[in-house]
Image 1 (cartoon, rainbow, N blue to C red):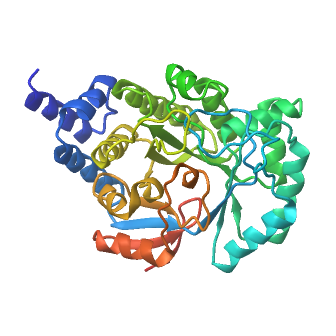
Image 2 (image 1 turned 45 degrees about the vertical axis):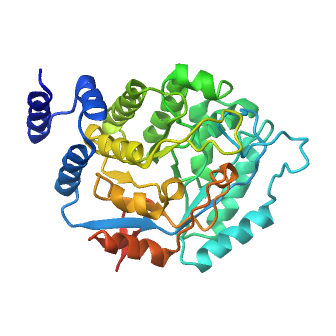
Image 3 (image 1 turned 120 degrees about the vertical axis):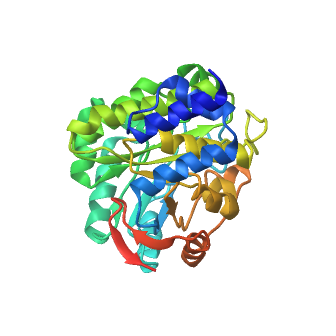
Length: 363
């Protein structure tokens, strides 16, 4: 089939609100020109979000420890327990960081660390209980699936029981970190000590069954192929489909490109064009996920602003603190006012939201 005919067939499928097939997605990613792909995604964004608003949340990423037993080849942040610069924050240090978040009007705590070899569930239960008592207006949106699996293992618990206890202590939602690409061939190459894609997915589905919302992510551009990127998106869509009858689900999808600085894996990063293609494709494939975030943390403000016309409708968080990406030598920073101006400059109405995408303030 000629490219033009195939493109019209995809347009017709989108007009009928039919999910894109694998071949459709691969065709869009590899054969359709960037501006046409962006226009398709922007049309879908307008249909889903006709109000013309772009959201962000005031949050802080507290990396409670850099000690990690996964030792991913793409990561510049992790340390061994006996390294001179290894750390584990104590409770008072964490409370001080969250207090600063509250002082800035923040509503979301994104707390992630390394996959610590020995921290059990009691450490997190005590911490979350106290955080909820001290800071009731802050949503604890924390711990990746890999961290949760490790906590369960250290504590001799099943993952569902571990999640139930963490949820009871105050964990309210789970970020989608550690997904990388949900293809085990890729995961074995870049993070062989981390959980496989099926276990990542199962943690998410177990959380949804408890009524917890999650996000989903993708880090692409290390050693993955275009087909792997498509497979990842289809698997995320399937997780959301299976969660449709459960009280929780995936609220947003966030992709970013691999950052090679200071890593064992090395290599190069994807281009801004590559990133925009992935954002656009995610909007088109993930027809059952409402929100697509633009990653200014890895892409900077200009590419993030362009992403708002390539299917994204959200700018993520203000991130008063971020250490993992910064360890790879990427340190874009954005104030709340800069995010407002970025959205407004792209022709949108900026809105401050909470973790559940409820609007708190319109600018």
